[in-house]
Length: 424
Image (cartoon, rainbow, N blue to C red):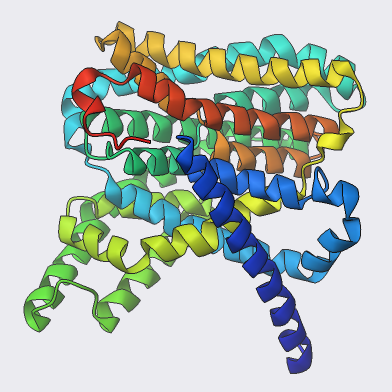
């Protein structure tokens, strides 16, 4: 590419990035003041900057701030931010509680998938008939079920971190159940994508082989790669008498992180799961976790992650709701999403022996859809399974489920954990 062209594109990207960081920070701070996760404000900032609000009154301004030339570079920055965020989320959690809580994890995650799936099967035919009869019914039903059953692992991580619950048994149980739900959701998404794209040519044999390779890779990551990196960390700390990163170790860490992301992407699941799994492999080394948090956490959260949410908001068109039926459909999607995930996870946790407060808290946490829901919705649109109206309905569902997570969790949190939560 021409160096002058690169410089021109860089200037455009910097202008867009400045606006995104400022808007996301302001809206995130506002949401935090009212007890909501900053991610909700970051998504709202994208909605405000996009065609749903400012774009209605000043479309030329939106085109000036976010021209076509910046969309590719911003999307790349957003992906890198998600990788680093998921890596941090994986490191931050203490999974030592899971031996006692494994039944709760499995039961709540299974019910947290089955109940929303059932809800999706109930409402998908009406949504299809009313809003998009031209779309393929089978693929649309699959997508609705997936979008309703998935949880937002990174946003749940941020909520738990902000509420100081990341190293509690409840936090570890919820994040593990969400990881299972998300993994199953991505598998379903992969299956549905293959079915839609390949039709009768789809074969189960390669898929089962792919699944076996993913399981094998995660095992190697936990038993070989993670311990090797931890030994390297301890060696560099002892050699240089330091509790932070040396350049050599940092190069090793980033290379391993990116290779892990590439491997999971090559194996057919999202690259962010490779980052998360690698973080989990290092979670048992608190000094390493602290060094990462001190060095990189704020930069990732403030400068990189908001780009993804803002891009989603820029593609959302609330103005496409041109009649009362559209708003009824929007309400129905959000209501079924909340009832299915909250009810399913709560009942699953109760059947496994958790208290009502624990079950409701787990359900409230898994109810948030923000990040993973947005990714799944974007895939659905790329596959041609969503028009603008349906896309906006599911975006609003992600906003509503994320907005209700904090208040529900504060209301239902067990009494012994409420004292850990900072006051709003």
